[in-house]
Image (cartoon, rainbow, N blue to C red; front, side):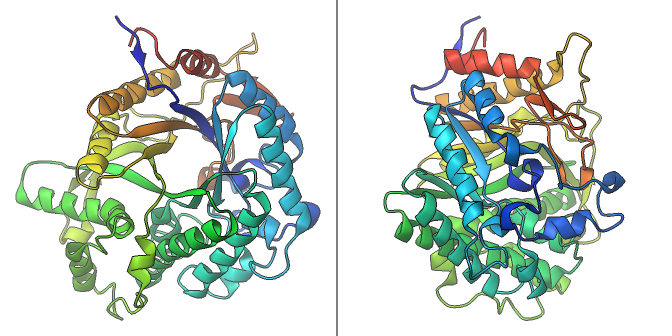
Amino acid sequence: MTNLLFPDGFIWGAATSAYQIEGAVHADGRGASIWDRFSHTPGKTRDGHTGDVACDHYYRYLEDVALMAKLGLKAYRFSVAWPRILPHGRGAVNQPGLDFYKRLVEALLAHDITPYATLYHWDLPVALQDAGGWPQRDTAAAFAEYAGVVAEALGDRVRHWITINEPWCISFLSHQLGEHAPGMQDWPAALAASHHALLAHGMGMQAIRAAAPGAEVGIALNFTAAVPASNTPADREAARHFDGHYNRWFLDAVAGHGYPADIVADYSAAGYLPDNMAFVQPGDLALIAAPNDFFAFNYYTREVVAAGSQPWNYQVVRPTTPRTEMGWEIYPEGLYKILLRLHSHYAMPRIIISENGASYLDPLSADGHVHDHGRIAYMRQHLVACHRAISAGVPLTGFFYWSLLDNFEWAFGYHQRFGLIHVDYATQQRYPKDSFLWYRELIAGNGLAGG
């Protein structure tokens, strides 16, 4: 079998987020986030786990950067904790918070690792939540202020910026399903939050470019392949709605097509838009659709969708196929199809996969190793899909594995492990897994051996 080589200069990276790894939630003037409040609310996370300590990365970042260098990473995607920078969401800047990220970036650059900074990965300051949070338009303006502060401080070192991570999770998962902070179950609030998260992206791009000329800015959307459970008209209609709700609602707006008319009609028929989208003001859609320098997206699995009583009451079917520990179906073909779709239907000029990975609970063996063969197989299958897409003309320029470290996995607490590096949470000892070694060889060879 021949090797599957990737284009010269392909960006091999790994990703994390602040609340999931940093810990030190009370250190150096950091304010409280909605995830601090949510995780300390009984019943919201498994076993009451919190991110208070997480991976202790705030104090161990030099050790972690050294591991990145050992891995051979070309780039590292991290997120900035908004409450470390502006403890109250707006106003006075907390200089020690900025200084931490300056030190982190300097350590990355010293090892020739390109920093990719994400400005919002779900840790809204509680002061902004208490003022109404993402359903309120003012939160987008507060984000732009925060983005400008960080870009001005780090823009001479950081060229690549992601404004918002996964607005679907910020809005629907958090405000309609209630599974993530702030834990609301309110359709109108979720729809307003979805718009204001995208508006924050548009306003944030302006602020970053003003503070850091030459910066490259994008957004990270999450995608899943929506497949009808059968070829019946009802199941196809349910899959259409699911795709529109989960994928097109955000993608179309960012791509300059506005919100998809069929999904607006579905939401209106369901009674979810009592104000007829009054939260969309003149000029908003143009601001949201301002050109990105690159387009980032996160992919993990697909959903098989069957009809409910109405399109918006779809049912997700769970096929009896191989799954990760999260219960997510392993479906690399979905990644290939999404890449082709972004290229052929949306003409995205430059694409990066900002997250792709798998949770497996392989234990630390007596020999000090984690033999995570399932994760290696998952990575290989999805990278083969990436290579197929590149061969078909898709301008895919980078891949970031999720996650560098085992970490606090939101409502699942510490019961899921996505990392290339095993973390013993009692001792904070790090153990590179077999997948770490496999990925190191792949990066060194810029491709899959025997692909």
